[in-house]
Amino acid sequence: MNLPTTRLDSAADVPVLDAASSALDVRLAARHGGFSGHTSGLASEHVQANLAILPADLAEDFRRYCALNPQACPLLGVSEPGDPTLTALGADLDLRTDLPRYRVWRDGELVDEPVDIARWWRDDLVAFVIGCSFSFEHALLAEGIPLRHVEQGRNVAMYRTSIETAPAGVFRGPTVVSMRPLTAADAIRAVQITSRLPQVHGAPLHLGDPSRIGIRDLATPDYGDAVDVRDGELPVFWACGVTPQSAIATARPPFCITHAPGHMLVTDLLNRALLAA
Amino acid sequence: MNLPTTRLDSAADVPVLDAASSALDVRLAARHGGFSGHTSGLASEHVQANLAILPADLAEDFRRYCALNPQACPLLGVSEPGDPTLTALGADLDLRTDLPRYRVWRDGELVDEPVDIARWWRDDLVAFVIGCSFSFEHALLAEGIPLRHVEQGRNVAMYRTSIETAPAGVFRGPTVVSMRPLTAADAIRAVQITSRLPQVHGAPLHLGDPSRIGIRDLATPDYGDAVDVRDGELPVFWACGVTPQSAIATARPPFCITHAPGHMLVTDLLNRALLAA
Image (cartoon, rainbow over all chains, first blue to last red; front, side, top):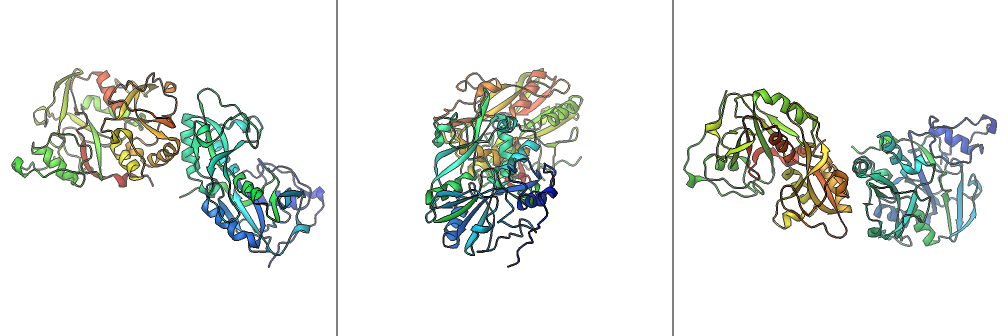
């Protein structure tokens, strides 16, 4: 196992982070402990991802769960047991240190929210890196499609739906969706754009009447913040990376680590490289 | 000018036409006079098209009108003045005889509805061949998306909208759309499928609330037959080849020939060859 070198520069050396930062800049800033904030908007050309780390005896079921539900759980990478590197997603990448903040769970209960997981790491852990909507939002914004929650500085609104995921082992539960209000013309363009991005949730699952997918009230999301759907707009719903987190929470595995919400893994992958041929 | 040979076989030789017929079978059946019916469902792998024939002095404006409004007027081919062939669309193709029925217009008034236009042909006429929705409907049906008007044996419902086309010379007017009711999931797939078919109207222009594009009542289409939009369905609207016909009707050119509704030009192009790379 070839672990990356953890540089021990002082926090004073941590670079200022912004949209133009490299992915490695962000990871090193997190690794040094000088950066423990949200990654939204940082290294904006790069793919950010959800992280779920499970013991090896649950990993095969979870891998199958992701494969069965690719829109909600698009796998960008899976580590070897005990190996905290994932060179396909970053040459100098250490999953134990490179996210700004983590959540550690025992039997479904949150037990720690550390800035690194060195002391929690075990030789049987398998890390799953799952695409997130930041990449397709970047593509939508680049095409001039306005996103209300971004304009308003809120988290995207997310809802549990009546669309059940395909179960695998202990992993099961509802598909969670994120919602963005769009005009019909922008909704059509958003379908076109996100269809080309299957590794970060792909096309919407639904648009229009929320009750069709079991959502009673758009004003009360299950996660994130509500935003208004204005006259002439349709709510457009994409499968969301909270789906696998919700499945893990329901399964209550003896041990598990995830990223803290909004504190994503910033990979070396370029958003534009995700475009399907 | 290299005109195709018009075969003078007797009507008794006209082959039985069906979905498996070749495009040439259909054209020869029309050319011989034995076939003057609708082309819907015939030679189903092949691209069918709208025809508009104008005098050369209006042709440049009409060509520009089509270029400015490519979703409504996707040009598949334009003939040389006076030349009734279009070898790119069919090796043995005579635009004067190969459609089952035509309409001849003088100053915007219908003056003839012949089965060939040999006696109306002039050396200054330019033929425009414009993609039609039959091709994308074929693609939607092939992907398992049900189309209500097909199930019910009706014409598709068409509506004038408040979306003005970009004018060119005397050609102007509203975009005409065709409407198909679909579930949200099928509407999303239909956007994906038809986005790949820009030569036959491409992606929908609109979906959802009809009043947003100036349609007051779905139950009273301006052309074609009404179909129900059922609970849980959205009306999905595509730009329609009636748009250029409507622009020509408004322009009232001194002379003009079109196909009779439903009596299309069947080309040698394969529907599957239209898929955008």
